[in-house]
Length: 203
Ligand SMILES: N[C@@H](CCC(=O)N[C@@H](CS)C(=O)NCC(=O)O)C(=O)O
Image (cartoon, rainbow, N blue to C red; front, side):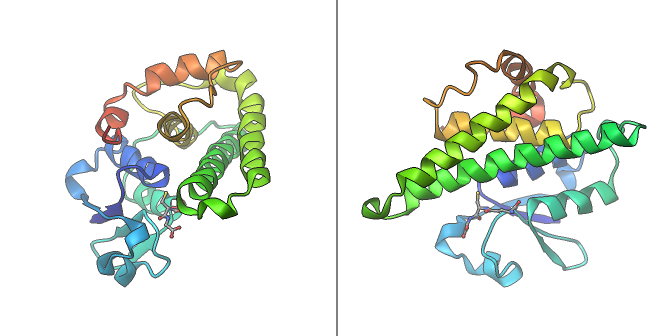
């Protein structure tokens, strides 16, 4: 398989971490591209022009980190088993969606500050994204004692780890740790997992 990715994309990082956690590293070649420069090889398989995109061994190219995750999990089991109780399973699915939402908000802020011409900068939009991130961390904090860093982790943990790492990368002065001591304590350990260390963006 081939994974089209960039080394800073938090969506791609979720997939790259998952690949390592599933022990699929030898089965996937990473092809590093800059989606913003519209490389032909990416557009050929993924007309949406976004990373990540996964070219399967059957020649199909799958866009979107969620779809790729589903595909990889269908190939290989290796994450923490889901809770038996449906309510607990839905809660973890919600938390994974919240983590993805933090990534969406952070990426929206990056586009606003790094891609949009300066004269069109929309401060209200930036503030809205910052508030969404702050509110979501507030909701996740009370349950953070249940976040794990065992041999097998869950999708919600991978997504949250990649979301927080992206906040550190792009917005080091955001201080997401303030007031979120449980999440912060968990993240410090999670960030040292081999999968997270391997996928650290270059300085
Ligand atoms: N929902 C997609 C989002 C992917 C995405 O927006 N990736 C960014 C990189 S962080 C990208 O390729 N942006 C280029 C563009 O928006 O044209 C996913 O989960 O994979």
